[in-house]
Length: 477
Image (cartoon, rainbow, N blue to C red; front, side, top):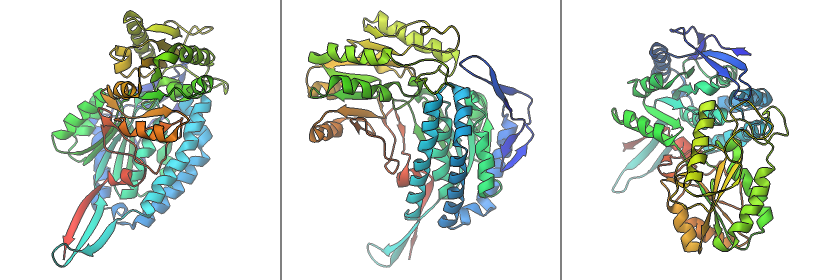
């Protein structure tokens, strides 16, 4: 067990101002994974004060960009060397299968490197002829103190997708962890210290909602960077708007995968289950609406149901497990509620359903579930379930498919499956979503990631991600 007794504030272990603790328990068997102190507003004040001082008078914002890059490069190497330990802890915290947790940790290496490459070529300062006469110096300067608030489903990835661009830009950061995964984030502090991050630049705290809102409202904070639900994002945006804080939000999704008639049905069904049921179904980018031609609907459903029924559900520490428990009992009950709704609205249950998966009697498990003959107006097709529930929706022609895909309050991700690349690109250009993957292609960490509509504001990854943490200054000569 990991018992964290002190907050990480400004690079130091600091005794908490309150006495409350969060117990982090395994959603698999309820075993105690560890404890971490619950941050109070007084703890937030200390962390913001340290960040404010580091930004206003410390060396970090005043270093050359290349000097900051050197520290982050050292951190990335240290983090990669600890990938197995971190993945094991996350799997115990939130139920991610160990194979998936390791894959996520390995994926952080190219994510970090893409940010470092972008920083190396980022136009920190440009000098150019002015439009009428003279010259203009255009500077990108660090924005200030950042409050980074992350969820529990992929905690290290969510933390570093914010920490890297913020720190590379020269900002100082207060990182707020979710109580469900309040342990693994503290390992980051020690690694950043070892890499040479100056005093005050980074604080790491675990807090519940009220204290998190105190952080968002704090007058010493210049920007909020948040990943989480759309509902929480709306609340944060409204609070940040009170003082016109900068804000970037990576929010929910209800992504559509459009299947064209020319695909190999069995092969596509086998491939698409990875993008549909990833991370126990707790992924904002999951392709949870699968759109198929009406003429092949039943055949595709049969093939996908066969794949879904073969998903091995169980102990997340077992390398053979493909799906573990959801993060908590409340999440299990929430997802069961959506399954009940789908049944009540008339969708056909093709795999999974209510109750515990076969052979399991405890833990926050939900059977991998597949609904067929879904109408896009149904609740299960419109709302983000954040669990292993996928809808198959028939369409009449490609115009109908694109219309269904775009008929959503979300627009984060999506996919097209076909042997015709030019047709796939034509369809992708018409989808109102931030990222479209053709035939399950992996994302490019050098390209901007984010959403249309209620899937968020701003972009992460690469140079566009760094640009979210700078202010623009123009000097006219």
